[in-house]
Length: 186
Image (tube, rainbow, N blue to C red; front, side, top):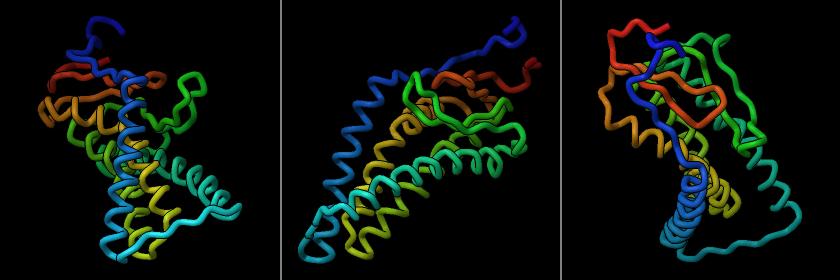
């Protein structure tokens, strides 16, 4: 970046710290969902067989892909980013799936895009699991809620800044570059 492109602030998340928070969030979500299900049903039973394991594995992969696609949808809906300016993929070195764009978005828009997958791939499966008394859906929901820990960490940091600041996502790292509004950014 040249001087005219130097950000006013950089937000970078600590992946090992976020991973620990994600595990804790997964565990607490699962316990909370099981307790909620017990309050609704009066009891909770869970059986594991080859089909339930297969459903979980396939469901988990599908929900991770959907999680990233919902980020892209958020970029489009909230940030007005053209589809051709978005990328989704896996960073095998960091062990994470990602969705990114090279376009600037407002702080308000990117915060919405960060949380959209939590609602669609975490809360919706939780509702399905609670409604049908299905432990696999509850477990998937807990894993996807925990998997949103990085999104929550970014959102928390972005919340400290005004809505109209401009945000550029780093295409390779879990890092955001922030610019005060009105700047000529190259």
